[in-house]
Every structure is written in structure tokens, then in C-alpha cells.
Length: 329
Image (cartoon, rainbow, N blue to C red; front, side, top):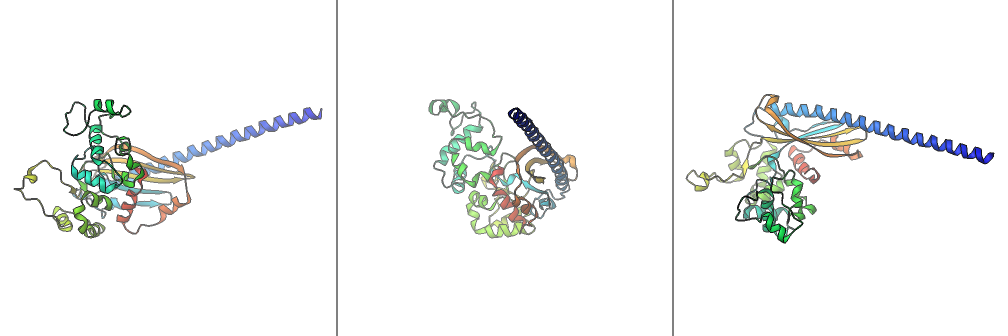
């Protein structure tokens, strides 16, 4: 009888523990859903504030660190940073020339065959119907590399570069952060990361301190000022290159922006990016939402709170530090 009683008690205890575990799991799931909902509400509120800032920009002819929208929005549980997309290289629109090959070598010194990498990149984004002087086509890859299948379309994410033959070295490099599939050249000289600036235009090495000093001030607001700060000469109108279709390297304005929002809700850290195009100035319907990317969701760390509350030394430092977070790209 005692044995039977003990068996019954053990069974009852097991059922009680199982019920308690199920109840705890249900409570945890409910808490996580509540925190996710709070994060979505907080991100939406932050997004509306960021869009209003962009819409109120009264100087679209230039975009600099001195603009109101470029100042990070921070609080106890959120941080918002707006970044121009044309501060980065777009792999879908790169000129496949020696200058870009040399730029890639400077960004990724460990890259062994940049010429091959660029031919493969060209094949990745072009159409098989196009006849190219450089770049192999799908049928060539079927014979030499059966496992490689170029999709012949624009890249949807900068991380697709890691799939292109010859670009695998980017996996072990911080250079992936300097690529984006949004917007087109030229690059905004007021925001381009310092390392990318020198890799893209090594001739500006002597002007680096002047450029960074101008960015930390009012910013570079005209073509004349850009030539003065960089020390370059404007093209002559009779210069054949001036009349060509070549895209200039630099600009002082932007059209597409990343609105990056980090939130802390309960025990969860969220990071997401909204891609926005500015069509007009002074009204919210002048902004077009192009996409949204959920970059990271994880358990919050103690240093996350410090990140939100620690003021940056300079806005330029914030932007260069932000580009140095390769996980976002």
C-alpha cells in the first residue's frame, strides 16, 4: 500500500511540475510577445519622428552632418540614426574598370584576384542576352564551375557579394560594410567613411584632414567648396571628359536614406533599418518607403544601455563608428 501511495504521489508531483513548466513557458512566450509588440510601437514612433525630420529639411541641395536630421535621436530605450545611402558603394552600379579594381585591392588587401572577382561580379548582375567584352556568362560557368549559378540580376543585399566567385575574402574583412544596394553614385563626400574615401580616391590623401574638418563644421555645401577643400580642379568645359557620360565621384546631396532604429524593450534588443527616398521637401508625402530590414533581435546586453546614453564626441565619429559595424550590411 505504501508503495502504491508513493507512486501516486510521484505521478501527481510529476503532473504538477509539468503543468508548472508549461505555465512558465506560456508566461515567457506571452512576455516575449508583449515586448515584441512594445518594440514595434516604439520603432514606429521613432520612425515617424525621423521622417518628420527628413521632410523638414529646407536645404536639399546639400546634406551634411550639420543638418538637423543628422543628429542622432537617443533615449533610455531607443536610438535613431539617419544615414545617406550614397555614402557607400553599390555593387549593381560599379564601373568595372581598373580604378575600381585598385579600390577593392586597397579595401581588401588579402583579395588575390580582383580582376577575376570583378568579371564574376559583372556576370552576376548582367543579363545573359548582353554581349560583354569582359565577364563570363552562365554557360561558361556550367563548364568550369558547375556549382556556381550567377542569377543575372541586381543584388538584393550587399551580403550577396559573399556568393560571388572571388569575393569570398570579404567574409574575413570589415570591407563588407562599405557596400549597399541602395542609391547610386556619386558618393556624398560629407558622409563617406574615411577609409572608403581614401580607397576610392587615394589622390585625396593629402586633403583628408581638410575634408574631415569641413565635415565637422558646416559641411561641404557647394561644388566650389568641394573643389577648394579637396584641392582638385573643376573640369574644363572643353575637356572631352566633361562632355562625356562619366559619373563624377562626389556629390554633396543624397536622395535615399537609411533610418536605423535600435530599441530596448524589457529583455529584448531590436535593430531595424527603413529605406526611404526623399522626393520633395516640406511634406511627409514627399517621402517614399522603399523597404524595411530587421537586422537583429536578441537578448539585451548591459552595454546596450550604455550605447544609448553615452553622447558621441562628434557626429562624424558616430557615422564612422556606425559604418564600422559590418553586421548591419
